Amino acid sequence: MEMKWKIGTVEIPNRFVLAPMAGVTDLAFRRLCKEQGAGLLCMEMISAKALTYQNKKTFELLDTADESDYINIQLFGSEPEVMAEGAQIACAHGAKMIDINMGCPVPKVVKNGEGSALMQNTPLAAEIVREMKKAVNVPITVKMRIGWDEANINAVEFAKAMEEAGAELLAVHGRTRSQYYSGHADWVEIAKVKAAVDIPVLANGDVNTLADCRAILVETGCDGVMIGRGALGKPWFYGECLEYLKSGAIKPEPSLREKCALILEHAKLAIQYKGEHIAMCEMRHHLAWYFKGWPNSSKMRGELSTVATYDELVQLLKRYVEGNNLQNDV
Image (cartoon, rainbow, N blue to C red):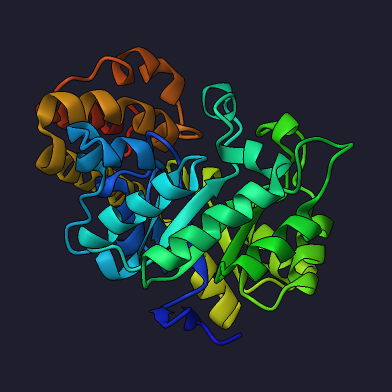
């Protein structure tokens, strides 16, 4: 499989994509994933309406630093005109492509007819795509699920309508809204979508190992893989998948020394963009993911959940290494 591909006229270096995750895929984590091999980065979802209201905190989410060529800015909303205006604002801030969130299952989004609720209203979803296409001259993509619930799986029909409206890529999470993130992703339904449309399709859901990475591409025939929770605490997973697909080689997992260095790099980036207090508070859930599966890491859960400064993090890592006689690996 050729690694380079295009969304519209935008060339993407490889087929492994960081999924949009609210509260996770901020600028620091995106930069780390890019360094580790992700070909395309999806921003955490942004309210189009908040952009039109000139909300300061929302505008901060639009910061892409030097990554704008490799980022898909995701907007959510349910009003076509507002989504179109939000797209124009995003483009004014350097967006090279814009994704529409039609997959978020959380109640506070769905109750407003946004996110995965749009899969219950195909005409409105298509109108949103059309209005955004008219408003901006960058590719419009759609992140969707396979349906609302088991009795209402409409991924194929919905995908065809989005393509007809002008979407240039679909990312399909193989779960229904009612599943949230439980159960298993249905790769068969993703394959049906890929077979039904002519635009690129990304497969998403249950990609946690290199075997999963190859299997989802084979079973769905998709153009690439969108990986979210499978990369939490292991941003190097994108590079591992890339090497595995290119050569069949299993790239060695980073040593403990390398993992600690990545954690500290992540923290430094977060502090650079958000300041130490906010950055270290937000780093706590990342630390829990990084330490998952490490020897004797359960003893450090309390400290991980209260670390407040960069220096504290450095000392915490040193104590962990020394306490587990891992000095030779760090």
